[in-house]
Amino acid sequence: MLALSRKKDEAIVVNNNIEITILEIKGDQVKIGITAPKSVPIYRKEVYLQIQEANKAASSVEGLNALKGMLKK
Image (cartoon, rainbow, N blue to C red; front, side):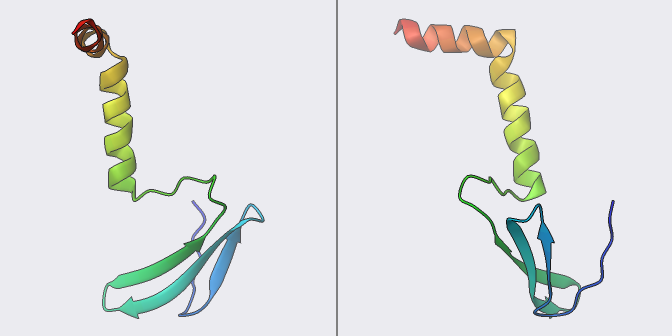
């Protein structure tokens, strides 16, 4: 992991096309802004993990059987 210190209104650039800017610092919260191409998906980590779990469940045998059952209706 790369750890960087940034102040308000300072930014970092990732892969030449993603910019992460510190917008606001209040107590223990930091508000960031992300500028990236529309083709780059950006998720909060907890949402990303939920998506991964849902995808795993949907690709399981039980998930496939449930999908088959829905398609037969």
